[in-house]
Length: 325
Image (tube, rainbow, N blue to C red; front, side):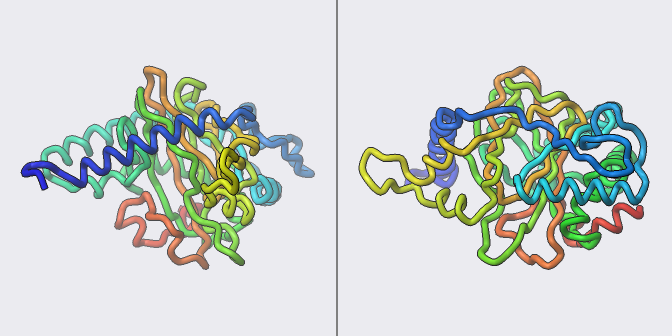
């Protein structure tokens, strides 16, 4: 072993190179692309259609909220991903973005000074160069409290999750993905595995804190890949005959994909088993996605570490508690 050489870091760098190369290759595979559009939901008695589009304001009645949540949940369980517009107001999204970038600056400063360990502020993320996963404290700033009220009470998101997991759904992740200029495209992946005989473990909500344009590296999802068949194909990277595509590559090439070209305050919500990736940020603007996931209260370990502060994750905060507060 060479003196003074961090072998683990060298191995990580080599692994990242391979991941970048694979991500660039997969980009050429994904040709059936279209924007993720909001699903039109018609609920009797609400007088409007579509997941709280840009024109809707205020809180819906409890009955209509539950009905909308149930309707959204039906689509989500089938597609594995869907879009709901305007879950955050533009003003709140701006406030959350400003707060989180200030928090990132302060966190990086404290880590650099050795006051705290990186894991106390940042979760692991695929391809760390120019990308970070900043965990968020709960109850320390009014803007985060306001954001959760808008998202979970005034939009259909809370009712959608409750319709699937109930009010006992556990807050599993609470963080912000920041993709800076020159961040590389990730490889396509699920966040949790498909488990035979089990339903979804998590539903994750990605909320745009700025308009996400094509050059900013929007999230790519492959709808309807949260299934046993898709996961079996995805795990098989070996072609049956020389010169043929592997089942994994064939799946990526043939499965239609959607792009998270979200406007500020819009949300992409997805089953954590759905195949997806972050694409490369070729713009000069950092892209921030405020996100959280809720876990089925009957599920123990999900198969992937949670992006959440240790004290918050250990509290097992339920959806019903957050809505009441």
